[in-house]
Every structure is written in C-alpha cells, then in structure tokens.
Picture 1: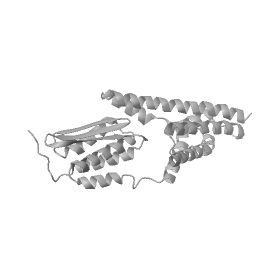
Picture 2: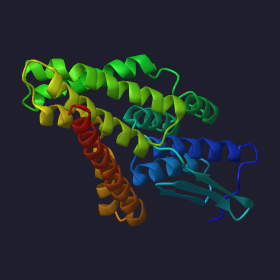
Picture 3: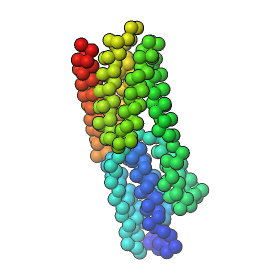
Picture 4: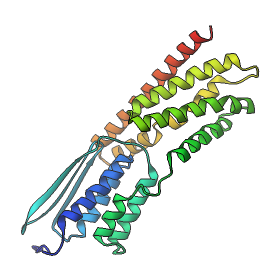
Length: 261
C-alpha cells in the first residue's frame, strides 16, 4: 500500500533530529546497533515506507523515502569519539519520550541540541577523576603509603586530561602522554619518598581510567550482532589505545630511571 506523505509534516526536521541523536550517540561510543535502532524509531514516526539507518564507527547514513516524494538522505561524518554513557542515556530518554508522544519533534530536537546543558563542569570531572584513581589503589591491594604517593600522580593525570580537552588533543596522544607522566612520576617518587611504596600498583591504578574497556566491549558486542565493520574498527581502536599506553609507560620508566640516576 502506498502511503501519501503528510504535506504538513516537516520531514527535514525529523531527519535532522534522528541524525543528531545518532551523531551524539556515536560520539559517545554507543553500540552501532543501538544507534541504528534509535535513528530508525525516530524516522518511523513519519509513517513513510522507507526509513533506513546505517551506523559505522566513523559515520552515519540515514534515508527517508516514499514513492510520492523525493528521497532525503543524510551522511554525517563522525570525527570525535569519547566514552560518555550519560549522553547515551539522555538521548535514549529523549527518543523514548518522542516515540511515546510525550514530546513533539521540535521539543525532541531542542532537547538534543541542549543535551550537554547540565553536564558536570571540568573542575568537577577533574576531582572525580582524581578520586577514582585514588580509591582504585585500595582495590589493587595498595597501602595507605601508596595512597599518599598516588596524589601527585592522579593530579598530573587530571591536569593532562584538562589540557587535552582544552587543546582538543587526540585521545591516543592524550593516553600516551598521561601514561608517560604516570611512569615518570612513579619512578621518581619511588626513589625520593622515605616510606615504602609499590610502584607497579600505583602505575596500574593510575592507568585504569585510560584503558579502552568500553570501546573493546562495544566492539565485541557489535561483532556478535553481525556489525563486522564497526566491531572490527572498535576492537582495532582499543588495541591502538592499549599500544599507545604501553609506549607511554615504557618510555616513562626509561626517562624516570635516567632522571633518578
């Protein structure tokens, strides 16, 4: 049966809303199948026959089409990605409310545009990062002395993160610099401090926020669901991040060893 498009319906607004939702989710490292499902659900509210969405790690393609109208196709390039599950959750909430007619399409679009309005400030994120690293030392079997020695290390990681966000440094470089600073400071502290510490435990605890656990998990999930291109891309990304962290740690231990000689 041929569906006649509603002339009063703003199809471009539906497309813009769906693509914006997908873009935010991809930039937040959401699974590609989840992105495709969200985009498709929004587009299906138009009632048109053809609503397609293809999400990749680095791009998004969405199409609206019907025999009685010209097709609308949008390609969106995804250049920046970071893990932000809060944004994914908020986009899901907006999409769910729109599909259940608790939001109009304009309200949904406005909500997505303002998705970062009530995000935490950089200062709050810095303190949270420091606290995460500090408390992780006890999970790794560290002592109170290790906790004290970790304070300048965690502060340095937070500082590198702040500079990387400000200067828009690529995550690979950010992780390598952070791990380098961690290794150098740990090597120096292990020689300067008068109380005993466990350098290995400090390094392992400090690099925990840098590890690509979410990326690797989503890559495996995408692969199991048949999204081989996205899954392979995310697994490769996780591997490259891990390599850069290893390079930073190795170089830091070498430099730190030379400094304390």
